[in-house]
Amino acid sequence: MRLAMVVFGCLLLAGILAAQAAPPAKPPASTVAGQVVQDPGGLPLRKVLVSLVSLSPTHEFISLNGRGEHGPHAAVTDADGHFQIDGVQPGDYRVTLERNGFVSTNRRSHSYSSASLSIVAGQNVTGLLFRMLPAGVIEGKILDEDGDPLPGAEVIAAATTSQNAIGGGQTNDLGEYRISGLPGGEYLVMAQSGQQPALINLKPGESRVYAPTFYPGTIDRRQATKIQVHAGDEVGANFSLVSTRTFSVRGSVSGLRPQGGSQSAPTRVTLEAVDNPMAPHFEGAVLPNGTFQIADVFPGSYRATMSDNGGNGWQVLPTGQTVDVRDVDVDGIQLSPEPPSQIRGRFRMDSDGSHSPDWTQLNIQIDPDDRSDSDGPVAGKIAKDGSFNIEAPSGNYHIIVTSNSNGESWRDFIVKEVVLNGKDVGDSGFSLAGGLTSLEIVASAQGSSVEGNVVDDDGKPVADIPVVCIPDANRRKRRDIYQQVTTDRQGHFAVRGLNPGEYQVFTLDDPADDITDPDFVVAHEALGQTVTLNAGEHKEIVLKLPAESRP
Image (tube, rainbow, N blue to C red; front, top):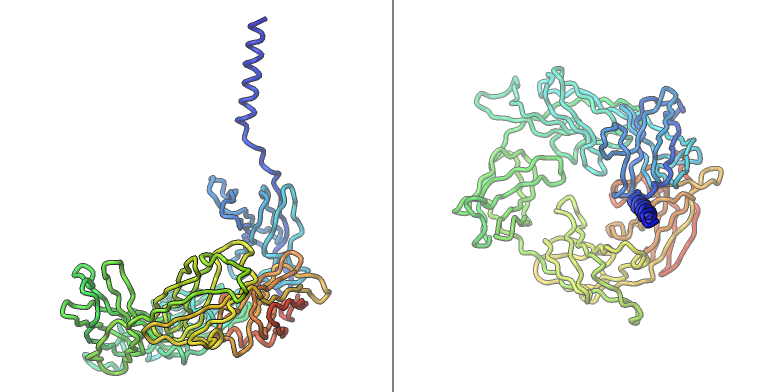
């Protein structure tokens, strides 16, 4: 009897341990299925790689290749454009489409599927419809100044709004290039070559190089011609590279800290092209006697900066000086670090003290009005009592305040005033020219808001479409009051924390990289619905898709 009880007890214990060791059951997986077609026309697209990329960084992906790697759920469309992805775990996903010669379109209407999905356990999502546009192409020939083909030249296309290279390649033996896979938009095309020019009119002993050249044949980016590319377009752009002499820039530096510029890591002087971030930089080391020489500089205007290893790591020291290189060597340049401006300030609420915010949840940026002629915004931290202390180079600035809190606590707050010498400079901005500047930043919980729905021609809501809100012309340099949001699954959007004033609110086909870019604003502001807000006011509107967003 006792033996039987012992055996029963062991079996019971083993069962309990086995139950405890059993892994928790995974939630039921789902299937996602649909079709990809060409836009316009609706023809099925085969060989499209359809991927579901989890929006959760901790999500465990199932690999398509079966090698146990972490990757997105994915499938390839068949001859009829259909796809099916099995084993999808619950979660939020972004849908990506890839096919050579085509680009995704986020144009929205009730007949288009959203670019994002929320999958519930056991839910099968079928009948999805995605569309892809034929990609644009820029092609042409790169020639030398005698009109002969130039093989091996590097050619890149950059979007005019972001100035980032979208595509590129090298010319073949006939000087031909082809840049494919381009979304619709405006582009600048630039070519450069490391070859030595072999020209008919080259004088004996004359040293020339090919300068980075923009279409239709200029080394000045401001004189470059924008190339408009539409879906499926093949746009020709033939042009000749410009050869030029190069020049030396010589001078001396002063005002560095005594420990700067060690022999192992000497201070360097760098020349960065003004108004052309695509151009190469030129630099030279500062010798122990404080002199420097930079050789082989292309003609142009350059910002001079110094890089100094002063014991606390490398620092870029603006000089506030522009060096113009034209048709002769430049001698006698004297450079010294530009004394930074000290900005001391404090935040306060405009209320009677009923709000006691945690100021450490906020970050402040001193945002230059001309970002092309600067290293970008200068960031600072805010102390618990609302005080801050920031160093920034000379220039014209506006204030940007952001929250590092993931909650809703700051959604309706605004920068109501930026007070300098008793005057509100929040809209106009302010100048720094060395010395000490004191600012008082007044925050308010009385932010205004605009919310509503985006609908198609049939009045049906349109999900996952960008909605942009831009301020009136007098406040366009104030980047902190622009906003871009996306409609939810019900086509609803909400723009909160707006300063009082007039705005243009409109929809886009695709999210914009920089809604504060003046070219973007000019191209889109006429599409907007005008909304005027008083302090703390809430308005509701309905936006309709623009004509180009309808099938």
